[in-house]
Length: 403
Image (tube, rainbow, N blue to C red; front, side):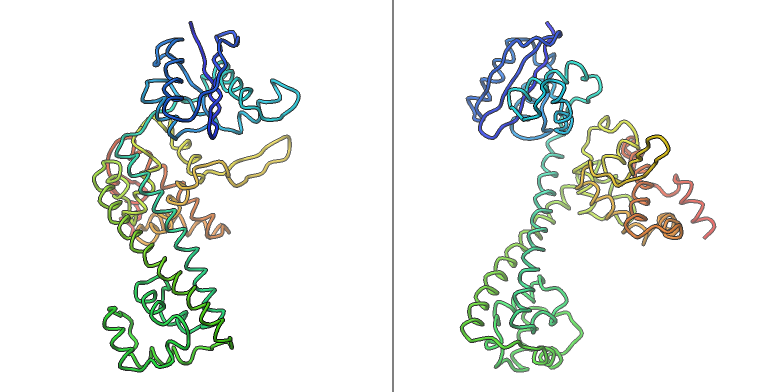
């Protein structure tokens, strides 16, 4: 008997609906989001057929519940929440959300339109590990940026000295200075010898002497603030700087592990072969691409997933081209970053970017155009399992020949 399963993801429990080929409900139940509940879910689904012949529709492509179903052998098909939202009026007049109702909608979508949806193909453990590392590092980098902005704004409110003293406020030497001298009062007795000793201990690589650095520190404006207020803000400055210091160390450790991990993967070496792809950016692209070659049917599919292919709206005589919002935003950020860097190393990429700017495109648009062009080549290299070779790239080879 052919069955279709719809599963609506919940916080503490999940609604499940099982229907037959005619759309008749065979079973409707809920399972708890714990070990016993997930084991009960797998056992109840197996009563209706073999896991490899039982399709399950769910709104999320990843997570603990998906991992349990995939490991049990079920054919899991992710359905975008927007599809479920658009289908609700087909089943009831009120568009209110209901977990049991959405479970039935998911099962029925799989019954009627399952041939249009691609089942989930799990990535290898190495790709999953790389993806976890990359996404975790990206989140920490975002947190670092937030804390750096908070620290800079706090310093500007009562002491501008450290803000313009070092190029990067999150650098080890800047954070060490801020923790040692968090207020104007604490740095008031700082002399040339002590400054020179501090710079030497923290391996200062700037071109200014200790005298120049001290002069810049003393010449910075110092807004008037009560002693108690300055001390309180100094404590906040020290706390934020200490947190940032720990965060920077952890980001560095993760970056080192990611660089080693991506170099061990065949897919990572393919992406790293492209000009100025680097290791971190290549790891970000590799983590989102994965190692399932059949995931993207064409280069256009990959470009749409990466958000660098525009969306054309056309109805009657009206026609417009818009920004693609529905995409993998992490992949888009990584691909556009790579494209922007590549134009400094590849004459072909620089030529594509320059022509886009000459047509009146702004920098972000020109970078997306270049990213779209690179994805055609990346998709081909990814499918063939071969690194990028400029000699096999006719347009790049022609520019090198004429140059």
